[in-house]
Length: 470
Image 1 (cartoon, helix red, strand yellow):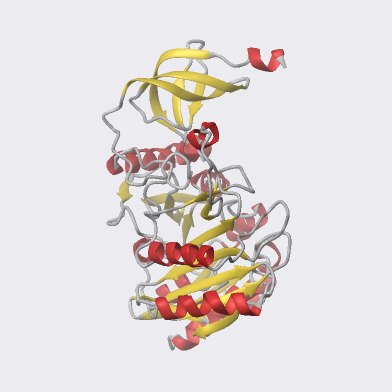
Image 2 (cartoon, rainbow, N blue to C red):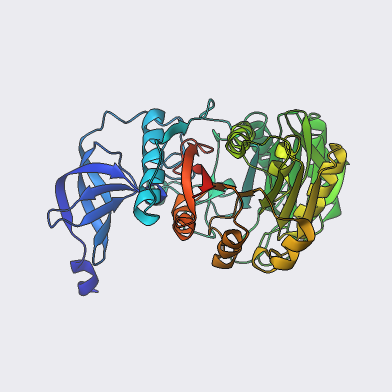
């Protein structure tokens, strides 16, 4: 025990000099090592208590603030610092954009060793709050207690919560009064559901004991005015289930899709569960440039509709289509990008590993009367092979929007074998994007790069790169 304690050190009057990956800020210890901090802003001068020591760095926490940075701003949310959802609310938005841009540029040059053209400034978001179209809240009968509550002798009374998981704690839920991420009536619905459940003795879930009734609640809103609410129950109790669902339907007539799931599994993922429509439709619609996208409870759709539109416009602009091209859209998801670029292409072929997503893509294309798109399902590294190209033609342009892990090296190799004139690479993780770009650097040159901020108040950033054959 004493050995572990000796690793903890206090460094005084340390200046925070930068922001790094995963939302942590960076300071330098007197011995020259980097210190990663979760609770400071570049420009702060602080005392640091370390809690982890590694060969090249420390992890610590700012305990005393001697000077506050001029990059700071007052967080809008009362839950900031505990919730963990919006790690950068205390940093003014223009500085958030600066550090996001810097991270993308650093990753491309340091990891990818890519020669960059003049970097186009990051595309910021018009709405820095209330921009998400989907939120998921968890019920708990043993809410997270603040330090003050733990130390007080008072009876804490109601321990029920409806809110978010505390970072790193699977069984602790922070009770949320007002979240600044999703527009009205999201907060009103969540607070009303919680109050009604308490009044009517509906049991909140206990993760450790796997007991209770109310498990999770998802709220989806869309630019068309549709609202979907889905409640997940741990067990079937018809009377109580109907009680709360009827209450929701009557109190919020603007809900266009009211659904539920009975899930008695150990985890609360719904992808292998039956979603039952209780009232209204089993889907909502999102709209973009006259295209409509049908979204059900399990659908993936970009969570910031407004910025997704900007991201797709940049992607289409980078592709520079003239109407004669065969385009492949890899990791197409529900085919939003494929359909978005289709009217400017000869034909678009979308490929995706998730069967449900492809079903939705086909349905949406039909719904939108788009006849020059085709969708195929399969694991990219297996399905995207020479036979596939032979069957569907050699693409002039490839658009790829892989998950956070980036593209499998076999997929990168296959793209190099095909050697399309242009590649547009959309990424939510510029580090894996840089790794993939390095593999293509011999054959392809980065012509344009554009970061897009989809998630204000967080460290996440999307990046679009245009590659042309050398």
